[in-house]
Length: 100
Image (cartoon, rainbow, N blue to C red; front, side):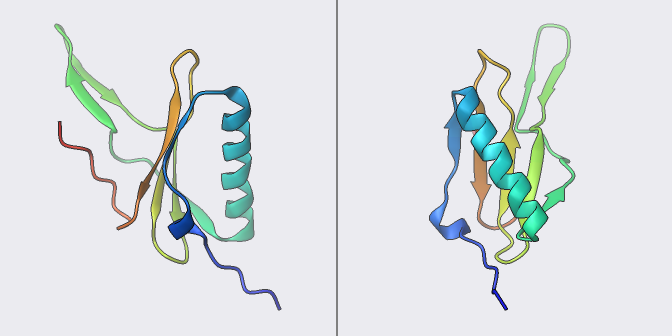
């Protein structure tokens, strides 16, 4: 029997600036979900909140994944080129917006 474990401690967040990289990362996460390493988690919090002259702006990432072994939360925002995407890692398993 093969023991499946995570490698979250060896991975880190990254900026997604090419379509090829986006496809590789998307496939990586989908494969890990199918293997039972990660679970899809409903995105419930913004990664950016601001105000324009007329309304409040809220940006949400595309996907969240939670590691079933270490509890790490991964935030994945798909690129909308020319805007880049990103992956952020939250070791404690909780989404925490950065202070500005």
